[in-house]
Amino acid sequence: MKLSIPMLIVTLTCTNANNIKPYTIPITRNGVTHTMIAYNFWSGEYPLPVINVKPTKKKWTKIFGYSSLQKVDKKIACTIKSGLYHPWSKDTSSIINFYSIVPKIDYIVKKDTQLEDEMLNKGDKLENEVYLSEGYCKYTLNSKKSFESFCINNENREFKLIKHPTHNKEQWLYLECKEGYNIFIKDKDLLTEQNVSKGTIKGYGEVKGN
Image 1 (cartoon, rainbow, N blue to C red):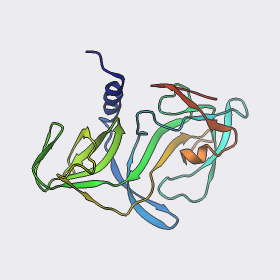
Image 2 (cartoon, rainbow, N blue to C red; image 1 turned 180 degrees about the horizontal axis):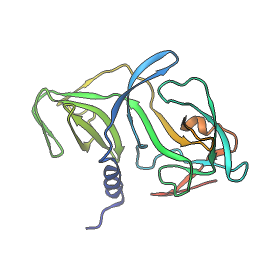
Image 3 (spheres, rainbow, N blue to C red; image 1 turned 90 degrees about the vertical axis):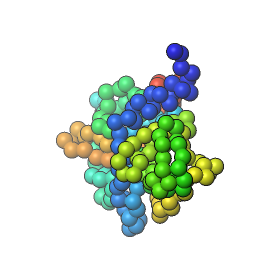
């Protein structure tokens, strides 16, 4: 069966997320600690940004990051390989993993209902909503079972949103340094480094530098 492009994107994204279990993580920003959801991929049909790290010396360049993404304090110098940094990049780079940190979104099921193929009972709890792509999300049911479905929205009256204090979404890269240690750096911070610029998406699954 031939899949349309939107359905193909959903299928590939959900396949990539099948083995990923979102988890809660405390992060401290400006002296305030927030409970967030973390997972090791960047969400979206076309994840952004594309980051082009240009060489400054023999295909290497120096940047500055942190030893932890939970609490950002003293910056650490790190020499990384030049190339495109993006989940779709085929370059041999210094990337170890990509991370997203998003607000914690949970729901209570108000009455017996069905979400895609999943039967839900009144009182069930849907936790740790993670956006995948094309309106699809991943949920954890009663802290046990994970499943994917179309995202819950304000029109779904069968669900009650549980409000949590929150902080804005962040995207991070975990990098291996030439110096022999590893660092975390936020995507926006990497783009402000010297000899680093935005690349572009050529098409689904393809990126290029500018």
